[in-house]
Image (cartoon, rainbow, N blue to C red; front, side):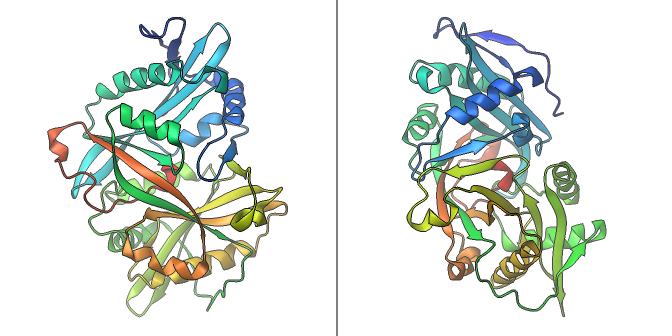
Amino acid sequence: MSEITPAMAYESPNQPGISVREATPADNTALLALDRQCVVAAATPVTFDRTPDFFARSRPYAYWRVYVAENDSGLIGVGAMALKRVLVNARPVEAAYLYDLRVAPSYRRLGVAKAVGDAIRAHVRSFRPTVSYSLVMEGNVASLTFVQSRGSRPLRLCTLNLIPVESRIDPGPDRLKALDDSAVEAALRLARAAHPGHDLFPFVDEASVRDRVHRLEQSGFSGLYGWEDGEGLAGCFGLWDYSPIMRMRVLEATGEWSWVAGRDLHLIFLTPLGFRQAHHLVEVVKMAAARLRASPTPGAARVLAITHDRMDPAYVGLEQFRPVRMGFTLFGLELSERGGSSFGSRLVFVDPADL
């Protein structure tokens, strides 16, 4: 269920004058304005443009809710949650992903984030998920402090690799082909081969892959691609142009970021991403870049975006492309004994939909 329900208000007992309710489509304009005010004060300061639909960020999930905080001045904060079926310790479990926490600059440190967090936590609790988690950008001290104050603990360091589409990448032999629905089973096998035993793996079966692809088709997803060798499908990826949902603007476009000065950063995620052997990831990047260069986007700085656990050895091959990297910390919390106390001790799959 992804429809936005009628607003339900929650008065905050600890923050007088602040009420929290579920967001509705009527909040879209105010939410877009709030988002533009909120510079992410991370190691690389960025702003986001989610015009025309703030809620598009949430639509890849089967179930999600957005909550807004308001007072007499209007809308002053927002936060969101999504429920996901994922693998934790090789078992399918329900996970709650918490994201999109924003507070208007003039209302920070006044309890707005806590009020939103309390409403989200109350809603999440009714579903009894096994774990909850969130991702915080490296250097975002305020969010790091807030998340830890809510009981979550840092579990894994994660990375978003950005590889300019326009960079000189040898495309290699043209073996790429579009994959149809009949290839989903083989694509899932490759994704599992590339991420064996990873926690938070969101493709627990073929139906979950098809559901993800279906949800992305209206949000910039151009399809699944792959190539074969003598043993069958060797590598596959989906090209998901994230710009219909969100564009980034790097505020300090100097040094390694100088190539994005004056341009919006358009992310094209590789998802679902699978490869039989680690060296096939290099082929994925080469073929994806070649496919994108065939259809340029004037005025935009397009990048291939690849997410992963920083300690995952399968992604070492990305070094040769000299990607620009943005760091994230995965915070998590066990909510049920069924999840086991070892959540976070294994490598994790970093879902592009979570960024």
